[in-house]
Length: 198
Image (cartoon, rainbow, N blue to C red):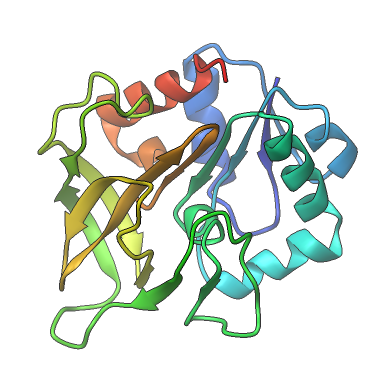
């Protein structure tokens, strides 16, 4: 069972619809106990980084960390990926999970923000999440903040400078773009995640 975590900030309907299309057993939930027994976890995100504060208040943060430590695959989408870093300039008082080092920053004034629309990825070979997705493929973005390029970066994107479009390490996966809004290639990425065995 895949737990799609509802913290009142995710693009839940589109993510659930994509998973249903793939024939995956997925449940949208705010229940930490259900998350603590999930086989995989997806944390979608839309909007302000401060929305992640409810994850700590509700006990969901602890449940997610517990399952990550047990080796369960975790996928953060958009703000969900940003939450995997230590912090974000969008909400300096809210801590991230710290799974990846660094802080998420705002795009420079030289480019229009938010970054909305289709953009291409420069992908590393060997990524399990991006298996079968060629470098140069286009995905749909909608964000004003982004994660830095890190050791775990497996795809980069260029917009006012390079940023992490996808990160991956062991059972941890994150994408800044929205696979659920990115057509067949987005579905391929979600299918790759659903078929993982970590």
